[in-house]
Structure formats: structure tokens, C-alpha cells
Image 1 (cartoon, one colour):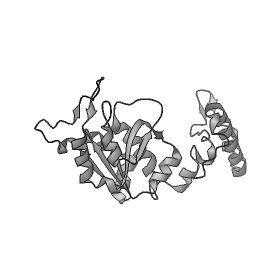
Image 2 (tube, one colour):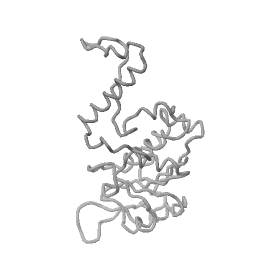
Image 3 (cartoon, one colour):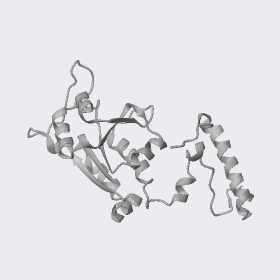
Image 4 (cartoon, rainbow, N blue to C red):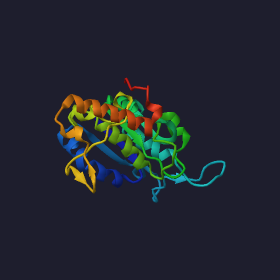
Length: 226
């Protein structure tokens, strides 16, 4: 799968693609990427990519000309093109699975007050919101989406690990413990030391339900079947 990211600060993304599990996925050929600097498509010597909004108001807006030229350079109109924005649809695990089926995804990293609406009208077929809050960096939002998607690709993480995560089966994940058995007076639940796998599975299911009731009760009864 290929991720093509358009940004004013591609160096932020470069470090991400060259670190940890992502770096291994790139090395294995599971993931490829292209970081496109929008400023390379600006027409003036100052590489200007933003301007004041029509109608007045605070902040600046990314200009359509350099952004459209950058999108044209990667053939975005024929690809799944995403603009992370607070005004988009809510990003969920089901959405991540949906995107993981694509061969290539293009992401536009906004800045300031956002991007010119005409670029959205012409190129974007998916506006995605991470939640009801505002980020100053579209690069961070893009990396969140990429991270949730690429880990679902075959060969990145074991199937077993993916099947036991939060949101699988409509529940949050059960609590985890490791050595030592006692830490600052708190003991590992005895059932996890019993070696009785059926009882451990039942305990974990019960803990998942209790945790979901406490932290995300709205998830109960909404099993993700995608």
C-alpha cells in the first residue's frame, strides 16, 4: 500500500516513515510512501502557499494553485484523496479497515485555517475528523490515520494481536500484566497465573465488558461487523 502525503513540512513525516514498525513495513515492501512538499509547486520566489481569507477573519488559508498543482503531480483525482479536518466524518476502526483495502491513499495536510474549498470540491473524496478538537498540524492528523491503517495490512502485525484489540467485538481491550508478579503492593490477578486457558479467556471477556461499561458504555451492543 502506498501513502502519498502533501505537506508544507514533509520533514515531520519523514521521521515517522523511517522509525519503528513503520520502517520495517517499508523495508519489507508492505508499505511505500511519497512525501510531497507543497511549496515546491508555488509560483513565486518566496514559495507562497497561503493568503488571507475572502470575507475577512483571522488566520490564513492554503492557496489553491500550489496545492492543486501538487495534487495533479501525483494523479490525485484518480485516487482515494483524504483531507483530515474537524468538519469531516468521524474516524473509527471501521474506517481504518475500509482504507486498508486501498492500493494508494493521498492525504492533504492542512495548516492555519485550512485549505481553499475549491480544492476540496475538485480533489477530495473523503473528509475525516479525528474527534471533536482542533490540531494546529495536519501532519499529526495524517500520521494518526496512516498509523491506524497500515498496521492492519498483512505482515505488519500478527493476526492474533489484531483480533484481541479494543473495538474488536464491540468492546475495549482487557487489562494486561507482565513481570514482576507484585509491583508496589499490587499483585497480578491469580487467574492469569493459573495456566487454565478457558478460565483466562472468560476472565478477559468479563474484564473487557466491565472496562467498556466504565469508559465507553455507548459501545455496548454496537459490535463492529465491518
